[in-house]
Image (tube, rainbow, N blue to C red; front, side):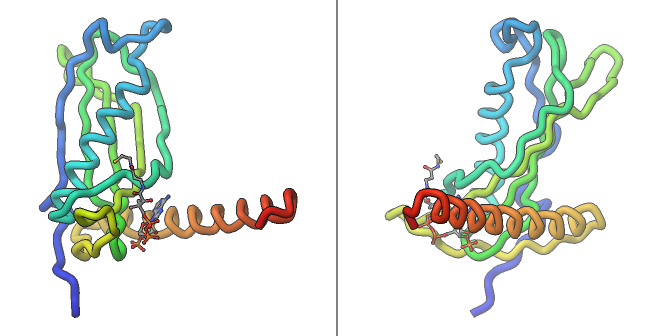
Length: 170
Ligand SMILES: CC(C)(COP(=O)(O)OP(=O)(O)OC[C@H]1O[C@@H](n2cnc3c(N)ncnc32)[C@H](O)[C@@H]1OP(=O)(O)O)[C@@H](O)C(=O)NCCC(=O)NCCS
């Protein structure tokens, strides 16, 4: 039976703002990275559950790059969208920018890629709708997501083989 299909726009979150206050700041006077990570995980969860129409759980953070710091007084601007769905899993891409809201100037500070799994009431993985990329950038992210999944699976296999060869525990 074919799966239902959904667009990227049906679940994406764009330009969600968060004003940086002193309690967001670390000892280097920049925004605490863990707070940004928690915000990304919550937002990506909403995107995943909108796409899946089910409860979802975070399975892995496949990449999270801090490209530049944000400072007190900045506005953090969060966006997230489904990049690709497979059977029960989805890759959600998140982007964070730091905005000087006086001038409107923005800097890209974080890119992150997370994998969520849709689960039933027993925590068992269940199928999600197929994602149909429409724009050129959606198609590019859809292709890149497949590369990240293949790399993750390949790396897991390599680590398993290394541990087996090194410790004899297979
Ligand atoms: C995520 C979870 C449901 C997967 O369970 P599982 O028994 O390994 O599921 P399966 O082997 O049937 O795989 C289901 C899907 O999960 C994917 N998956 C499993 N482990 C994964 C991992 N570490 N990273 C990315 N994807 C993963 C599989 O590739 C598969 O995707 P597909 O159906 O699209 O091909 C289970 O590991 C779990 O509940 N983990 C804890 C989640 C959690 O507590 N998160 C933090 C709070 S939300």
